[in-house]
Length: 147
Image (cartoon, rainbow, N blue to C red):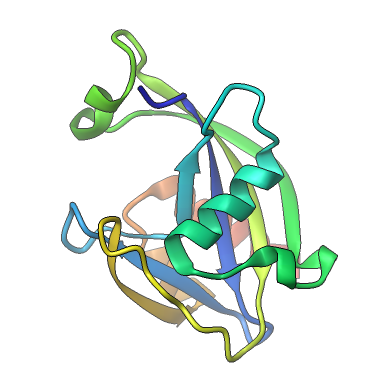
């Protein structure tokens, strides 16, 4: 069963382009990197690094230390009914912690085919509009409102 605590990582370049990945299990569901903790007490930033590597092939440990930033923001949202079976009975809400990751302009993306089938780099406003999740859109806009 999944732990109802997750990370969301907005991956972006210095020109303002944001990486979106399309879910394999839902056509046209575009999102940033997301993922649940592997175990209770897992460090959130380590979970973010792990999820980025699993979903995009980007090894954040090879980037400058300041590339990964905790946005110091979390939200609680209702788990989509289609995914509630992944959680223990009675779990209907998830707490999501936001991070950002600045990557070099020529970063190679290697998708995990069981999870995602396509990716694209979009200007941040277009990326925020394309996300299926309102909280993902908010995270992108919040990141760029600080710049």
